[in-house]
Length: 207
Ligand SMILES: C[S@@+](CC[C@H](N)C(=O)[O-])C[C@H]1O[C@@H](n2cnc3c(N)ncnc32)[C@H](O)[C@@H]1O
Image (spheres, rainbow, N blue to C red):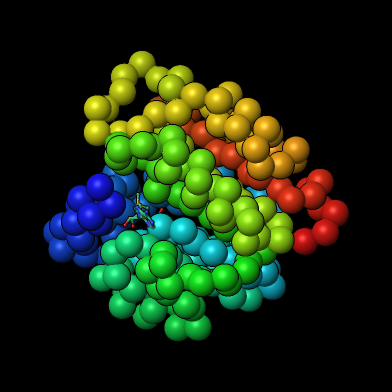
Protein backbone atom coordinates (compact mmCIF):
# COMPACT_ATOMS: atom_id res chain seq x y z
CA UNK A 1 0.00 0.00 0.00
CA UNK A 2 2.79 2.40 0.93
CA UNK A 3 4.53 1.43 -2.31
CA UNK A 4 1.45 2.43 -4.34
CA UNK A 5 1.38 5.80 -2.58
CA UNK A 6 5.14 6.28 -3.01
CA UNK A 7 4.78 5.53 -6.76
CA UNK A 8 1.95 8.06 -6.92
CA UNK A 9 4.18 10.82 -5.47
CA UNK A 10 7.14 9.76 -7.61
CA UNK A 11 4.96 10.20 -10.69
CA UNK A 12 3.77 13.63 -9.48
CA UNK A 13 7.40 14.70 -8.95
CA UNK A 14 8.38 13.52 -12.45
CA UNK A 15 5.45 15.41 -13.95
CA UNK A 16 5.59 18.65 -11.95
CA UNK A 17 9.12 18.94 -10.54
CA UNK A 18 9.63 20.78 -7.26
CA UNK A 19 6.20 22.30 -6.78
CA UNK A 20 3.06 22.23 -4.67
CA UNK A 21 1.51 20.01 -7.34
CA UNK A 22 4.16 17.33 -6.65
CA UNK A 23 2.84 17.27 -3.09
CA UNK A 24 -0.73 16.93 -4.46
CA UNK A 25 -1.81 20.47 -3.67
CA UNK A 26 -3.59 22.73 -6.11
CA UNK A 27 -1.25 25.64 -5.42
CA UNK A 28 1.62 26.83 -3.27
CA UNK A 29 -0.78 29.19 -1.53
CA UNK A 30 -2.96 26.27 -0.49
CA UNK A 31 0.09 24.29 0.67
CA UNK A 32 1.34 27.24 2.73
CA UNK A 33 -2.10 27.91 4.21
CA UNK A 34 -1.94 24.41 5.72
CA UNK A 35 1.54 25.11 7.09
CA UNK A 36 0.22 28.34 8.55
CA UNK A 37 -2.34 26.35 10.52
CA UNK A 38 0.30 23.93 11.90
CA UNK A 39 3.31 26.13 12.65
CA UNK A 40 1.76 28.08 15.57
CA UNK A 41 1.99 25.01 17.82
CA UNK A 42 5.08 26.76 19.27
CA UNK A 43 7.90 29.23 18.65
CA UNK A 44 10.13 26.98 16.54
CA UNK A 45 13.27 29.12 16.52
CA UNK A 46 16.13 27.10 18.00
CA UNK A 47 14.05 23.91 18.10
CA UNK A 48 14.57 20.43 16.62
CA UNK A 49 11.84 19.89 14.06
CA UNK A 50 10.77 16.69 12.34
CA UNK A 51 8.77 17.00 9.12
CA UNK A 52 7.11 13.61 8.59
CA UNK A 53 6.20 13.15 4.91
CA UNK A 54 8.41 16.12 4.04
CA UNK A 55 8.27 15.96 0.22
CA UNK A 56 10.72 18.58 -1.05
CA UNK A 57 10.95 20.35 2.34
CA UNK A 58 8.50 23.12 1.46
CA UNK A 59 7.64 23.39 5.15
CA UNK A 60 11.18 24.58 5.86
CA UNK A 61 10.78 27.26 3.17
CA UNK A 62 7.57 28.34 4.86
CA UNK A 63 9.20 28.49 8.30
CA UNK A 64 12.17 30.48 6.98
CA UNK A 65 9.73 32.94 5.39
CA UNK A 66 8.05 33.67 8.74
CA UNK A 67 11.32 33.87 10.70
CA UNK A 68 10.77 30.53 12.39
CA UNK A 69 13.82 28.65 11.11
CA UNK A 70 14.44 25.73 13.46
CA UNK A 71 17.90 24.86 14.77
CA UNK A 72 17.62 21.38 13.31
CA UNK A 73 15.36 20.20 10.50
CA UNK A 74 14.82 16.52 9.75
CA UNK A 75 12.64 15.37 6.88
CA UNK A 76 11.30 11.85 6.51
CA UNK A 77 9.58 10.50 3.43
CA UNK A 78 8.91 7.21 1.65
CA UNK A 79 10.04 8.80 -1.63
CA UNK A 80 13.83 9.15 -1.54
CA UNK A 81 13.76 11.09 -4.83
CA UNK A 82 12.49 14.11 -2.91
CA UNK A 83 15.67 14.29 -0.86
CA UNK A 84 18.06 15.69 -3.51
CA UNK A 85 15.79 18.72 -3.91
CA UNK A 86 15.22 18.97 -0.17
CA UNK A 87 18.97 18.89 0.58
CA UNK A 88 19.59 21.75 -1.84
CA UNK A 89 16.98 23.84 -0.05
CA UNK A 90 18.12 22.91 3.44
CA UNK A 91 21.86 22.19 3.28
CA UNK A 92 22.09 21.57 7.03
CA UNK A 93 19.00 19.36 7.09
CA UNK A 94 18.85 15.63 7.58
CA UNK A 95 16.65 13.58 5.24
CA UNK A 96 15.89 9.88 5.42
CA UNK A 97 13.40 7.09 4.84
CA UNK A 98 11.13 6.34 7.84
CA UNK A 99 13.04 3.18 8.85
CA UNK A 100 16.32 5.11 9.10
CA UNK A 101 15.07 7.49 11.77
CA UNK A 102 16.32 5.22 14.54
CA UNK A 103 15.69 6.60 18.01
CA UNK A 104 16.18 10.27 17.08
CA UNK A 105 14.34 12.75 19.29
CA UNK A 106 12.83 16.14 18.48
CA UNK A 107 11.03 19.06 20.03
CA UNK A 108 8.15 19.18 17.54
CA UNK A 109 6.95 16.94 14.73
CA UNK A 110 4.73 18.05 11.85
CA UNK A 111 2.60 16.02 9.47
CA UNK A 112 0.92 17.88 6.62
CA UNK A 113 -1.14 16.12 3.96
CA UNK A 114 0.26 12.67 4.71
CA UNK A 115 -2.95 11.20 6.11
CA UNK A 116 -5.11 12.30 3.18
CA UNK A 117 -4.51 9.57 0.60
CA UNK A 118 -6.88 6.65 0.99
CA UNK A 119 -4.97 3.53 1.97
CA UNK A 120 -5.78 0.28 3.73
CA UNK A 121 -6.17 0.97 7.44
CA UNK A 122 -6.16 4.77 7.24
CA UNK A 123 -7.26 5.27 10.83
CA UNK A 124 -4.70 2.83 12.24
CA UNK A 125 -2.01 4.53 10.10
CA UNK A 126 -2.63 8.05 11.40
CA UNK A 127 -3.14 6.95 14.99
CA UNK A 128 0.01 4.81 15.13
CA UNK A 129 2.05 7.45 13.32
CA UNK A 130 0.97 10.22 15.70
CA UNK A 131 1.60 8.03 18.75
CA UNK A 132 5.08 7.08 17.60
CA UNK A 133 5.95 10.68 16.67
CA UNK A 134 4.66 11.93 19.99
CA UNK A 135 6.92 9.45 21.80
CA UNK A 136 9.95 11.12 20.13
CA UNK A 137 8.96 14.70 20.85
CA UNK A 138 9.66 16.77 23.91
CA UNK A 139 7.18 19.47 22.90
CA UNK A 140 4.46 17.94 20.74
CA UNK A 141 3.03 17.02 17.36
CA UNK A 142 0.95 19.04 14.89
CA UNK A 143 -0.89 17.39 12.01
CA UNK A 144 -3.83 17.84 9.67
CA UNK A 145 -6.54 15.70 8.11
CA UNK A 146 -9.48 16.09 5.79
CA UNK A 147 -12.71 16.67 7.70
CA UNK A 148 -15.95 14.73 7.47
CA UNK A 149 -17.69 18.13 7.71
CA UNK A 150 -17.83 18.48 3.92
CA UNK A 151 -20.51 18.29 1.22
CA UNK A 152 -18.52 16.01 -1.06
CA UNK A 153 -15.93 13.28 -0.43
CA UNK A 154 -13.39 12.28 -3.07
CA UNK A 155 -13.23 8.45 -3.01
CA UNK A 156 -9.42 8.57 -3.31
CA UNK A 157 -9.06 10.57 -0.09
CA UNK A 158 -9.56 9.74 3.58
CA UNK A 159 -11.81 11.93 5.73
CA UNK A 160 -11.80 11.75 9.53
CA UNK A 161 -14.33 13.06 12.02
CA UNK A 162 -12.52 15.82 13.93
CA UNK A 163 -14.20 14.92 17.21
CA UNK A 164 -13.06 11.32 16.81
CA UNK A 165 -9.46 12.41 16.24
CA UNK A 166 -9.66 14.79 19.19
CA UNK A 167 -11.07 12.01 21.39
CA UNK A 168 -8.30 9.62 20.38
CA UNK A 169 -5.61 12.14 21.31
CA UNK A 170 -7.24 12.94 24.65
CA UNK A 171 -7.73 9.29 25.58
CA UNK A 172 -4.58 7.70 24.16
CA UNK A 173 -1.92 10.38 23.73
CA UNK A 174 -2.08 13.47 25.96
CA UNK A 175 -4.51 15.65 27.94
CA UNK A 176 -3.18 18.77 26.18
CA UNK A 177 -4.88 19.00 22.80
CA UNK A 178 -5.84 21.86 20.46
CA UNK A 179 -8.32 21.30 17.64
CA UNK A 180 -8.42 23.92 14.87
CA UNK A 181 -11.22 23.73 12.36
CA UNK A 182 -11.31 27.43 11.60
CA UNK A 183 -8.88 27.91 8.72
CA UNK A 184 -9.37 27.89 4.97
CA UNK A 185 -6.97 25.62 3.05
CA UNK A 186 -8.18 27.46 -0.04
CA UNK A 187 -9.25 31.07 -0.07
CA UNK A 188 -12.95 31.36 -0.82
CA UNK A 189 -13.71 27.76 0.16
CA UNK A 190 -15.03 26.35 3.47
CA UNK A 191 -12.97 24.77 6.29
CA UNK A 192 -12.72 21.27 4.75
CA UNK A 193 -9.79 20.10 6.81
CA UNK A 194 -8.70 20.44 10.43
CA UNK A 195 -5.46 20.59 12.41
CA UNK A 196 -4.61 19.13 15.78
CA UNK A 197 -1.83 19.99 18.21
CA UNK A 198 -0.87 17.37 20.79
CA UNK A 199 1.33 18.82 23.54
CA UNK A 200 3.38 16.94 26.10
CA UNK A 201 2.74 19.65 28.69
CA UNK A 202 0.45 22.61 29.01
CA UNK A 203 1.46 24.92 26.10
CA UNK A 204 4.15 27.42 26.90
CA UNK A 205 5.38 25.76 30.08
CA UNK A 206 8.48 23.87 28.94
CA UNK A 207 9.64 23.83 25.32
C1 LIG B 1 0.46 15.45 0.39
S1 LIG B 1 2.19 15.18 0.36
C2 LIG B 1 2.71 16.42 1.50
C3 LIG B 1 4.17 16.75 1.46
C4 LIG B 1 4.58 17.82 2.47
N1 LIG B 1 4.23 17.45 3.81
C5 LIG B 1 3.92 19.13 2.10
O1 LIG B 1 2.93 19.48 2.74
O2 LIG B 1 4.40 19.77 1.17
C6 LIG B 1 2.36 13.69 1.32
C7 LIG B 1 3.79 13.22 1.50
O3 LIG B 1 3.80 12.13 2.43
C8 LIG B 1 4.68 11.14 1.98
N2 LIG B 1 4.27 9.86 2.59
C9 LIG B 1 3.20 9.09 2.30
N3 LIG B 1 3.14 8.01 3.09
C10 LIG B 1 4.20 8.10 3.94
C11 LIG B 1 4.69 7.30 5.02
N4 LIG B 1 4.09 6.15 5.37
N5 LIG B 1 5.82 7.69 5.65
C12 LIG B 1 6.43 8.85 5.29
N6 LIG B 1 6.02 9.65 4.28
C13 LIG B 1 4.92 9.28 3.63
C14 LIG B 1 4.53 11.17 0.46
O4 LIG B 1 5.61 10.57 -0.21
C15 LIG B 1 4.44 12.68 0.23
O5 LIG B 1 5.71 13.28 0.08
